[in-house]
Length: 75
Picture 1 (tube, rainbow, N blue to C red):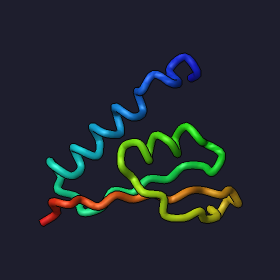
Picture 2: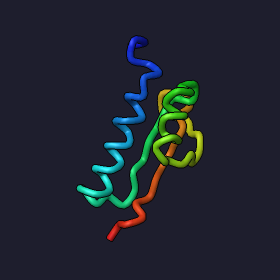
Picture 3: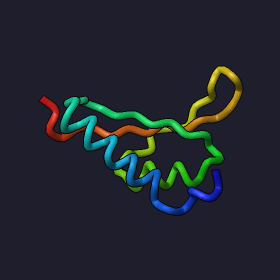
Picture 4: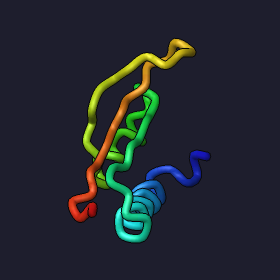
């Protein structure tokens, strides 16, 4: 939905999701996946702190990107 692109919604929702996952659910690691050509999602995941891990091929033949972030306060 192009009318919602470039307004920061993905970044805001992503930051809230990471915060909730780490501080409320006490998750050790959060993972993300994007399609290789989705540059906006790639940038959004990096912006919220996820680290690019690697590209991999999905069973349907598409190439995806893998990301992760570790909870520094995980117990």
